[in-house]
Each structure stands twice: as structure tokens, then as C-alpha cells.
Length: 260
Image 1 (cartoon, one colour):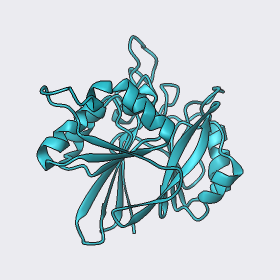
Image 2 (cartoon, helix red, strand yellow):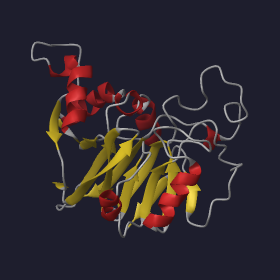
Image 3 (cartoon, one colour):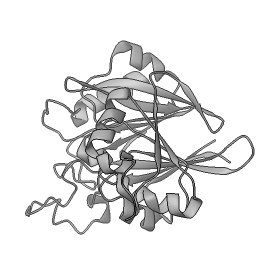
Image 4 (cartoon, helix red, strand yellow):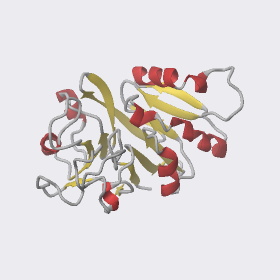
């Protein structure tokens, strides 16, 4: 089985449409201008041929995203960082616990996992009974690790002054909230075929790449295909304000990519 990626959500922290906004993008009829919060689903076969499903982040709309994409199983979660738009769907993973009758491993930096334990304290309190809660194991990582026969490489990047993780699995790399990529992390992206990269808007932001900055990173990485995500309502899918070169595109909710 090939490595398959589904973009569950392609929007920024507010989602699109933004509450109370009547701008052209928020009122657009184009389905690709409707963006839930950012997350992706990866599917691949393990060494025994069993299909595995891995999430990168659990966006607040996870339940809706999972229903939309027909998700029936989940085997692990990779967390980039602990901001609300990337973690607040965590409670909905309990549906997979109930179906599979097993715990789910959650991977991330020690800081991210500590924040999960603090924010979702009820999940980890041994005295909490009943009501249904996620069954999770927290797996801190600070370097490459094996996951169902694949090697996962954390890619440290800067989200303002905060270090967060992107992730690489073979020919695919996913980097969302990012304003700078250290040289050592750029080296980890050498040879990537498909790069999913955060690109918030056209004008500057202190903790996110602009479209132009993301284009510059795309040129340095040299992937044959770059897909921008974490897009705000300043970005109209159908009317880009800058010309996107061949091999670069805006992502959208439901985008499906398959790699050998």
C-alpha cells in the first residue's frame, strides 16, 4: 500500500468563514474557500500488510472531518504543538478507542505532551471514571522513531519564538505553523517529493510564513509538489494575488495525495 495523505483541514486558527466576517472569501460560494482547522490523515500499510491510519494533530472539527472522510480506525497521533487549533479535537479520538478497544499512542515533544496532560487533565486522572474519555499513551520524541514500519523524522521549526515540530515520512513532509526553518531542519527535508507547508496570508505575520516567504522555502526545498496549508481568509483559492509557479498550489479540505 502506498503512502496516502488526506488534508482534513486547511485553515488557520479561526477557520474560514471567520465568525461575523463578510469579506469576499468568507462569503464565497467556492467549497475550497471553506476551511476547517489544520490536520492531515496518513494511511499506509505496516510490515505485515495491515492498513494503518495516523493523524497529524487533532483539530477542533475532528469529528466532522473524520465523518466526512469515512474514517473507521486510528492507530496513532503525531502532534506538532499544543495550540488550540491543533489539539482541541483530542476528545473525539475516544470513538476509535471504543471501536478498537485499544489505547492510542500520541507522539510529540516533551513540552507538547506536557501541555496535553495539563489541558486535558481529566483524560489522565486515574480517578476519572465513566462518561467516556480517550485512552492515550504519551510518547515523547526528540529524534527519528519507528512507527508501523515507517521512520518518522521530527523536523524542528520556529513558530515565532516557539519551537514546534513538522514531520517527515519518507517522501512526504508536513510543516504547518512556521515562521523560520533552521538550516539543520532544512537538511532534514532534502529529497522530499511532496511538501505540505503553512502559508498564512500575503502580508507579514510575526509567527507564520507569508505566501511569498513560503514560496522561498519551497524553492529551497525543491520538492516536485508543494501544497500550502493553514490558509487564512485573506487567501482566495480561486484568485491568488501572486502567481504560483508550477508545482505549487493551495491546499483545501479533502485534498487527497498518494505517494509510491
